[in-house]
Image (tube, rainbow, N blue to C red; front, top):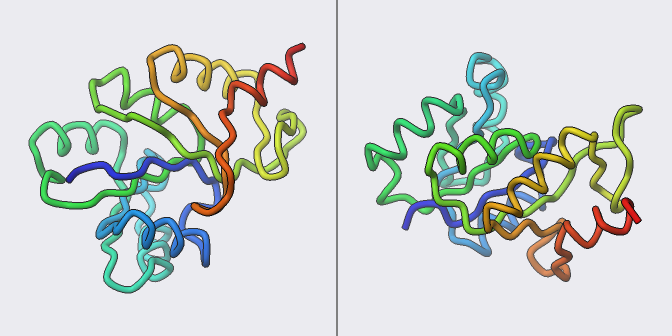
Length: 162
């Protein structure tokens, strides 16, 4: 047990997408790893309400998650990690948290980001973070639903670079 899914989705917990991923991976706890959200009790409460029935939700800072993970606090859980972007998973990898793959579901378009797929846009810093994650040996794949075909993000990033 432990981490069964790591997902980047700036919408966090929402509708069919989250239900689909929690069911497909038999998730019993979602941890949103984000320093700002961890400090916001109102947003944490709203996210708990949005979770599928029977799935616990916590919002933790990067440092708190790393400490709790290393103390074995999640060893008996089937954990889904949710991030708003690639910075947090890169920080976990650097801290020694084993992430084997990361699913990217949605990163909205903003003026400083360029669109690389229907639902994913990246800034130059986020693109750099993704390349560092890939270079650390972690697979990064883009897909909205578990039933969608997997697309490796480096193929999308490479196309944009070339």
